[in-house]
Each structure stands twice: as C-alpha cells, then as structure tokens.
Length: 290
Image 1 (cartoon, rainbow, N blue to C red):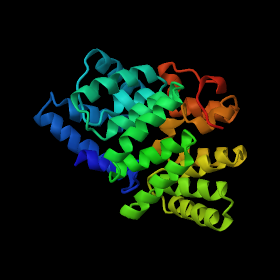
Image 2: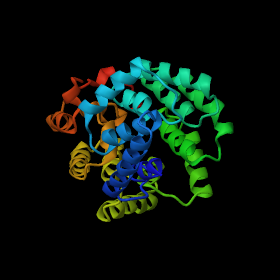
Image 3: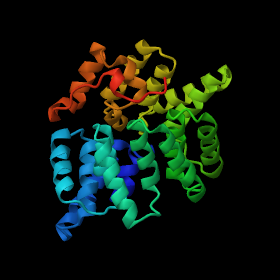
Image 4: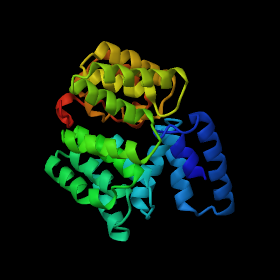
C-alpha cells in the first residue's frame, strides 16, 4: 500500500503528492515497527525522503550504507534511480547487473540498465538493451512509459512514438510525462493544433495542482524549443510546488546547455545537491542528444 501511495504521488500523477507521502510514510513506519529488519520497507521510506523531501543528506547516508550492505529489492530506487540522478552511473550499472542475476524477469531492470548505459555514453548498447526487452514487456505500463522516454533521449523517435501510442491505447492513465512527449512530438512534426492541445492539457494539470510534476514537464518542453527564458520560469514554478521530478535537475540532458546560468546554479543549491558535495556538471560532462 505504501508503494502504491509513493508511486501514485510521483510521476504517475494519481494522488496529491503531500497526501501520498504522508500516507506512504505512515504505513512504512508501521511496517518497520512490526518488522524492524524489513529492508524493502526501509528502502521505500528513503525513496520518499528523496522524492518528496529532497533530503539529500539523509538519503546519501543511506545510499553509502547499502553500497556496503547490498540486498535484493524488486524496485530499488535508492541504489538505482538515486545513483543515476547523482551521477553514479557505474555503481548503478553494477547494482542492476547483480539484481538481474537474482531476478532476470524484473520489469524495472532493463530500462534502468539502458538509462545507466545511456549516461555512460554507450548509446548503441542502451538501444539494444531496450530492443531486446521490448517483446517481453510490451503490455507493461511502467516499461512502456520509461522506454518511450529513453527512446526519445536516444533519438530513436519512431520507437518512442510507438511505445507512447501503445500505452495510450492500452491504458487510460495520462500523467504529465506522456502529455509532454505528445506535445514535443507534435512540435517536431509541425502540428501546431496538437501541440497547443497538449500544452493546454499540461497547463490544466498545473492549474489543478496535479501531481506528476506538470511544471517540470512544461519546462522540459521549452528546453526542447531552446526557449530557456520560459524554461526557467517553469523550473521556478516546479521548485515552488516542490515537484518530485526536480530530483532530475543534475542529470537531465535537456538542461545541459544552461548549467552555467545563475538561475540554474541557484536552483541546484536550493534543491539540495550541494549539501552532499556534488558540484554542478558542465555541458561537456553529460550525454545529450541536442
């Protein structure tokens, strides 16, 4: 139940994010009271500290602990997602490969591995990882969403569009990340009517104070257009709303061109990366298809 609350208040956009974290944290604390050694519940709790509280110092301490005390978890956000978002791509890849040996059928591991490979500069390997996994998870909402995003960054736009179309055909869930991809492809295809429609939907999500980080994805849309004035306007709105996708601030490829901008530097410190001694990356240190 806690996992559902935590996911639903994040990029899925199901529940109000503060209510989701309040409920999720309460359930996890009950679990740990009953079973103090439950490491899955512990991982889930620190996942919330990362996504919802941006408590980098606390999460970094836990991350260093699990590096020395590894364990298998079916959805290990801290050892994978947190590691990637803080630039520890090789460590994340090592963890993924160890987990795959335990559970080769886990839906989370292929796209996390592809993501780590992408950031390590192994674009062909990342695409092959996804290509090999596509037939296995073609009906999985989570996989389709993440692979549609990754194929976009890997510049395999046709497969990205295919997965985006499939997820919208099979499922009714329509969080901001999917609206952003639709708006981006409408812009790339020169379809101004569809582009305006999708942007309007993102703005409606934002105005309704929806979870799923609509302000962040509006900012990402303007990054695609290289309209960085608008992008920073919406990044600030994302910060003001404490949206969970701001945890991507350090590694987001679309932000690579603005990492020397004073507004980016200020946000970087306020989100919390500097609290664990992570310096701002320069554009040449990161992968970007643009």
